[in-house]
Length: 417
Ligand code: GLU
Image (cartoon, rainbow, N blue to C red; front, top):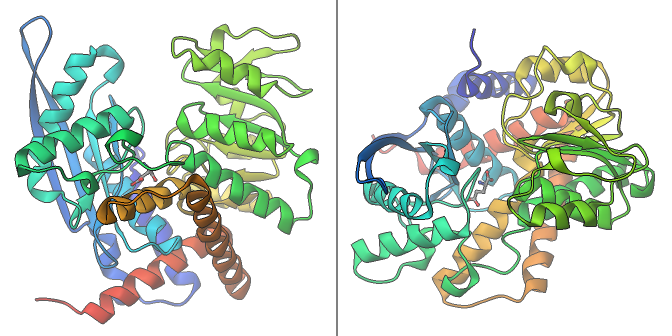
């Protein structure tokens, strides 16, 4: 059967609930998204023709607060993917205990094929189409795969124009000058690093003795590489859409970052002494201590999980590992820290951005980073305790924490109808 991310999500939910003896009645609602919207977005292209793009916004659960989650622009995006990504957001926000539900948006498009003007018109068209269901108290989008601060700025501007006044808190991940937060661009990578270092501390392993391979060198992967490298880890392989590079003695990450800093540079053309070129699939099977998938979902599957040569996996992407692969990973004794904790640094600083917007007040960078660290470490400790209590792996522990927090809120609120 073709991979369906939302089915995968539900399978893990059932497994986690079973591990702690919950009956399906107790958690039934988390298996259903609250609201889904599919829109058609007509865009006037530069050559004068009109193209119609399909877009989505799914709100999975709002028991704990307004829905929150990014928007991705990708040619393979579809409603099943966005539905799963929305559910993972509810779970992620619950795991780090911030007062949000979960949502996600997507547009089926390869943004690299659009001019800047076309991208802006597409973004404004999408914003107008989902306008009725978003807002600072309802649902707050953010960047995700192939979207960035500029796209969030256009989103905020369009929403504000339709409202008749500036509404900064409708979206996070904006540029600083229009209500963005210090520390937001690098927050997901920083959070991944905080969690990776907590794991090493627990295992009494020094970062200096840790080799790391990272799949994906976008915002999340490149920042995780930067911070882990700065903390002494040896980064032995990284990859982007064009392919990967590997170096047993460790890559000079400052050099790689400077090279890709020029957006046109792809890793396939990177040249350095001792560097070999590999494919993205080879990257996943690189011999290393810590593997960090930081690209897309459905990367570690039952087809390649048996061949993994790492000791730990820290999931920086959303949903990189399938439920079947989880079992193989557990059997191989690989310790996996799941996405809904490991990559929650982004949405956590998005939460700080929203709080600053609502208060018309800005925090210093130290304030942002200190609070991010506190929230991530607390969440890690909560997860570790639940894993120990029930003798379950971190994936199931994270789902248990999320299910318990969401259903608790749901039960306290009760059913309206
Ligand atoms: N897209 C990011 C995620 O998957 C951030 C979401 C947000 O900041 O709302 O967690």
